[in-house]
Image (cartoon, rainbow, N blue to C red; front, side, top):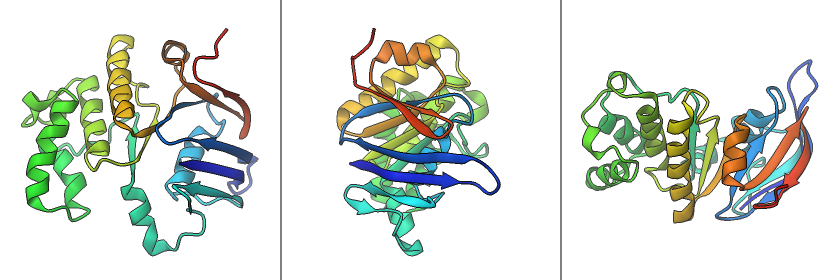
Length: 225
């Protein structure tokens, strides 16, 4: 599903953010991406969506070389990848329902599909009863659930989550992890960057660890001391 082959990314006048990284992530896996701040986690995710391009190496997603994609094909790549962020990135002037609808409207989804798909995804994330609420009327955990609904409403093959529990308390974080696990069980490949070692230990999914841009650990699911 996802393959990095000898990938290096260097920002101007800096050490490599990603340094000769090679790894494979299979279809339907749930993988944690860990490491200290500045280790390259966010860059790793941005390389998959072509927000960044590597200096050297190749990245394949579903067999396609995304490094070689022409600019006009990048939107198509991104439609197959949902993204969730630490700070939610919701539109404050739109309701929960409108925030999720917007993700489908921008890709030209038919209104009939939007009318059925949006309520279904809000039910999945447990917010069907709050579709008319605005972001400032929601808790942090509820806002993150809206963010996940928006990322998943187009049924992407891959979901990338960059510190999705970073602003949440431990109990709320567990609820978000249960939701991401449910999405993964549907068949979506999930790659989640996190600092939260307690979540990594609890879930016992595969772990990729970066340190100064280098892949220093690839720990299989369930292989823990």
